[in-house]
Length: 290
Image 1 (cartoon, rainbow, N blue to C red):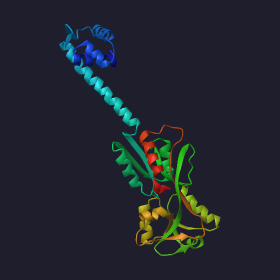
Image 2 (image 1 turned 30 degrees about the horizontal axis):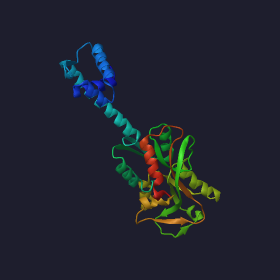
Image 3 (image 1 turned 180 degrees about the vertical axis):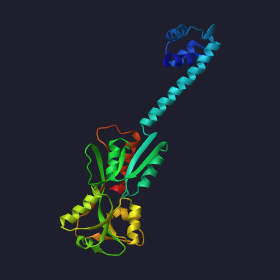
Image 4 (image 1 turned 180 degrees about the horizontal axis):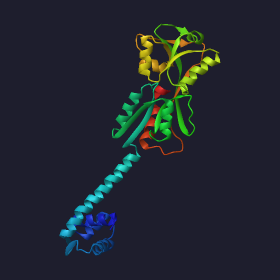
């Protein structure tokens, strides 16, 4: 007994006539009669009572009809759900976001949710290094990261480059690296990671030492420390726009090409789920990233 036979039997049970059932199934009557006979022989029970051209279900036929209807409908539901999942209408979107923030990230998620309301969201915030490891271990599928970053084995779509700015409690129009080297500095990352290395390399290039008093990858805490006067910091411009307040000021760094690059990564040469593909498409179409 297979699903094809169950569908045949459902048509017979509902039409109560072999010819009508055959027409409904777009097949000829003799093969359908043979399928019914084989089904009864396989089960060892009589499923229908024949009264001329009309058929009535036996009690066992009624029981099989009820179960067959449930099984076939359940299979159709499974097929529909699989199709919806393949199209990205259902499933899970797992994405990481760098601690330095991503402009308009919440708006992106809102737009995605409006397009795919049945897709559940899993959002993780961490440093770029740890997000990369999570993508490699498939704990998450996508991650917004800051460069430079080792990304062998990863596919990458660059979104934009932006300048770093100097942030402190004192308003300054511009400031040089030499001037910054005399100011206590809180690095917005931890040793060995992209932003940390970018800042240190800029000072090394000018043969300057910076007065590093702290490292902090949590932007809320970092801005609170700067606001309290513990020290100054160097962060991407969009981060200041996101976390800045009226008590601190951003200044252009005049003699250094300090850039931060934002991109989104995923595993190269690996399966990418439909929700993730749909989210990538939305990200790439977002004009705010151009």
